[in-house]
Length: 392
Ligand SMILES: *Cc1c(COP(=O)(O)O)cnc(C)c1O
Image (cartoon, rainbow, N blue to C red; front, side, top):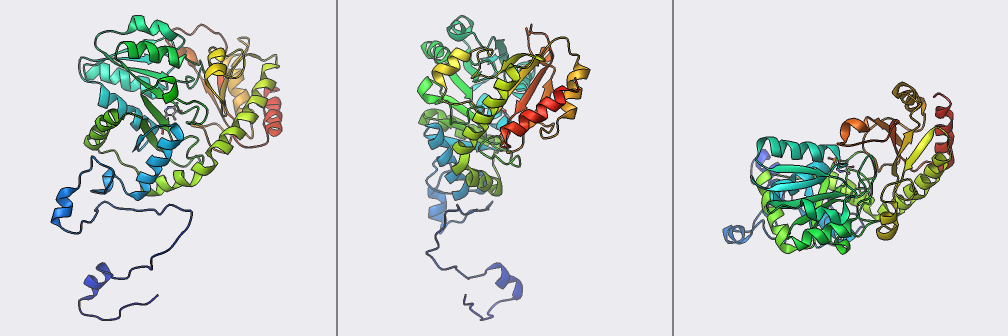
């Protein structure tokens, strides 16, 4: 490295206007982390010529740097879409979709088994912002057509529902929606863009919580909204700007770093989870294993028809003879499985839910416990569950 030693200006000016330029020609696999609030223009004409509505140039850090643009492009490609916008969490991506496509007077349909905060947001929009939000049976399929009103603008889907795991018939819902000109958004987090080809099944807008498999490290919060349609993306982009949604470039880098192993990790979670789920289905303490790849799970046939994999997340129902106190003791006695929300990382997790309080019409008896199968050896996870079941 050579430095120009001349001292024509004061110390502060010099250390601020540092003129060193690293040599060109550096090549590596890593995507550079470009931090910026201020983005520079060569001259006023260049500044005036640029617009944040086109991702062919840069205007302001909030609207992206090469790091976030690269992540968006890779996520769009994985999902089979054309456009992607990043949000600071999966929930912020859900919010972006609702605030883009719903106005006062509009109606939104949400599956009764939706990710809890999606439901919370819908209730807030309906309580304070003049939107009507209605909840539907996730297994409704083509029957959704009877629920669509003239003011229905958006139908949310989630495949499968994050806690109770019913797999909806996405093609049937999308066909009914298209007939009536209603948009369908899918929370595709469970399948990670790996095991379900959303756009090919008719979905208009895909939401991903990158917090899960894409990050893979239990250390990043981020979301994405992906579309094929330029027009839908333009509407999302306008709302994205108005809401001031942006992500940190270090976080974007962490996701980029883990994307090349996305499918390998997903498949490893999948094969261990099926092994653990099958073992659990033989246990007398468990009445149902709610894993889309197993026949107990509502919507299993739809999963077989439409999905190519299953990942690491599933739930079980304990026999109704066990009290919540007993199943809590089971969870507390797990050693490898830790107690905590989220999933998609290397560590196995376990969370009990009060499912009957989350759902409109839950009839099954028995405590629901959700497992996230991490990347540990499946036999060790089974042994851990077995010793904890002794505590019931
Ligand atoms: C985690 C999750 C979200 C929200 O993601 P955050 O980044 O935690 O806000 C949304 N939907 C599903 C299905 C999730 O699992």
